[in-house]
Image (cartoon, rainbow, N blue to C red; front, side, top):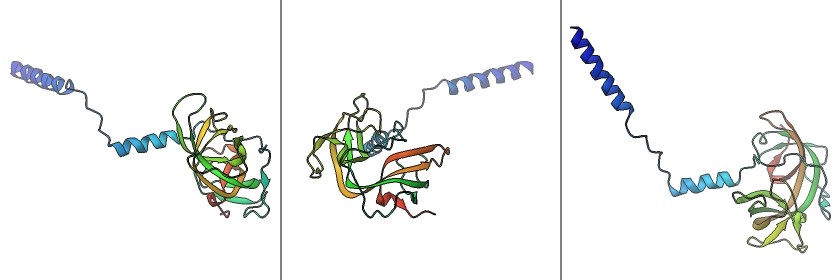
Amino acid sequence: MKKIIITLLTITSMLFLAACGGEEPKPEETTETEQQNQEQTDSSDHGDMNMSGSGEVPEGLEKAENPTYEVGSQATVEKDHMEGMKGAQATIAGAYDTTVYTVSYTPTTGGEKVTDHKWVIHEELKDVSEQPLEPGEEATIQADHMEGMNGAQATIDSAKQTTVYMIDFELTTSGEKVTNHKWVTEDELSPPE
């Protein structure tokens, strides 16, 4: 009887070890669309964004005459440029009328190309005329919203004339205070809750 139990235990152990020693599972294959979506998510990541700013604005930037959200007033942030931004209650620190761009560029510090970065304003582009740039045109960025941005050659992805705001808020994820954050557009804000 002991021999039968030992034999059964040995066979069971061998089967168990054989099952564990097979090939490692292959990672799930991803479609080309899934890979592109992942690349877009990675390239527009704002993890290295300089969330707070000095409050200084570029030369030539004009204050908005009749902004929807007056300096000192409150608004709710409707977009998530960074984690913890959407839903935050913001205080308007500045309101300016300008042309705002989404841009793509390769950071001067190296690394992956950043695509459709929101936002760079006209006054943060080097040696451009007063006329707004069109999608596809190139310019050098003179802003340091993100590491490796200042001095990078950018391609304009989109352009629109609007009011941009500099805001103070607390991240909804951590409560960390962010001051003089540049920039949010008027359509990315809503009346306070």
